Image 1: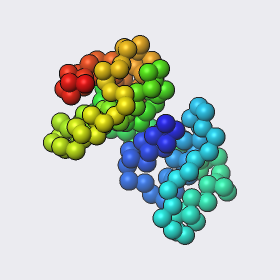
Image 2: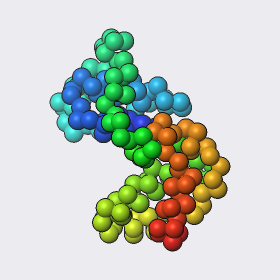
Image 3: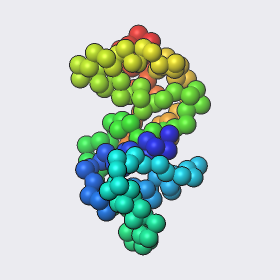
Image 4: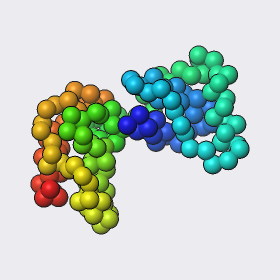
Length: 152
């Protein structure tokens, strides 16, 4: 779950090298996160990520990340999983992702959705996800739509 927060920050825009420090700090500031383990492809990635250790508080300030989010994402799931944890253990971001990919014509997305242990049908509409969503997505309604779409 914590990884989703970091991935959301990474995916908001193509990052410059110096933005990685901000994304690491962003992930570390999430509730319950004790460590961050970004992917490393080689020595150059490792050198860049180690810059975090000596970064100043100003360099770690990730408030600018919020400016990268396009205004038109309000009400749309961006799979960040800030809505988690779900009391029913739904992977809300993944359910939304498979739905959106399926709508876009990805035939494998439906198969992946159908193989999930918990699907939109397991949503109890408790509202926990809605209260935590930073993009004002009505996940309770969306889960009903996804359940109807996939029939599960």
